[in-house]
Length: 93
Image (tube, rainbow, N blue to C red):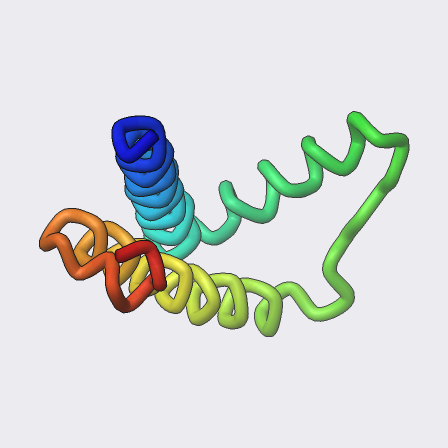
């Protein structure tokens, strides 16, 4: 029984680490190329038959960069927590 729980914990750690890497990549994209990030969001929303466009483009670019930096930081924190066996922070110890 203990082996199954260990496998589940390892799978959760892997999933959280993967989520952290994805967050780092998407956040970095938003910081480096905010227009491309906005275009990606618009493309995704178009698949759901929604058309979105910013009201104030300069403000949207600034906010995209800021939130991208926050997302990248959170991604690094997730990756660090799992990678350094600091999973007790995430309550998976």
